[in-house]
Image (cartoon, rainbow, N blue to C red; front, side):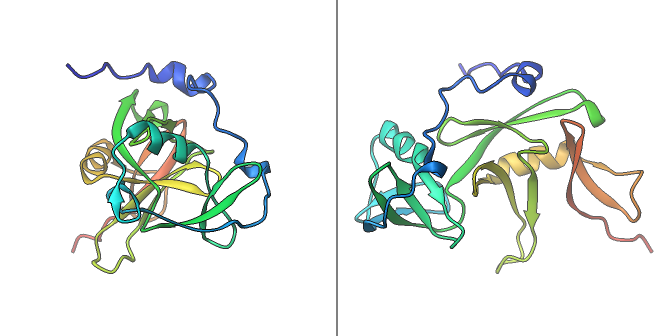
Length: 191
């Protein structure tokens, strides 16, 4: 039996239920080196080529992950800073829960590491259509410079919730969350 969806009205107005992430943005130790740790595009974490077997370890490392202005990803503690490799985004949005409609809609995403993020002004949705294969790459801002790639299933659910924006010039298609409109793309003109 799958868990029931979170109460989105409460999520949108309350602080996170989970303990806050460590304050990695305030920690500035010198670079310790590079760690043979890679996060694949599908969300799998690898150490020395072998996938992590313990989800608790992935969640622990995810809590101390940071992306700096140089575009690199680091695992950071107050005394150590290790550069790691990330193929695309470090997290995946694996679940979407929606409540309300139109401007009153609230969209909550659950990541593969258990974070629940409500799309809104502080957590925007973006879609990159300039990918090598031409496939859309939809992202949700999670924290700091970190974002989650929406899985294909979640993106398809999001598209189903979309609407053409009537008050914008052109034909913009997107979704609302916390009174913010997020474009999913432009509609082609009909001929």
